[in-house]
Length: 127
Image (tube, rainbow, N blue to C red; front, side, top):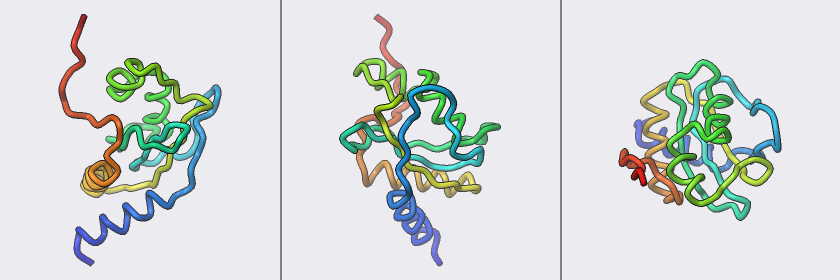
């Protein structure tokens, strides 16, 4: 299978994966492995597509970073738009061990879903 075909198969697997609600309190406990995820609002609109970068607690830690406002997504989108994921938002994910595959899957999924927030590398303007 060509790499492009493999990434497309992974994308289809991601968007078909089980949806999880962000808990109203406490930690997120879905996977300590690395992977790619989609965050949705309560209307199932994609807000963000992201990936882990080798963090010790994988997807659990990365998703918790968003909930705790410790990510660029939370600082550049959630805070500005008064969004709280706890007991409101949902997410889907798949575990992907290979860093290249994670990056390619994140890029493809973001390009196809056009989430409301996408990391552009542009820093938030200070007031």
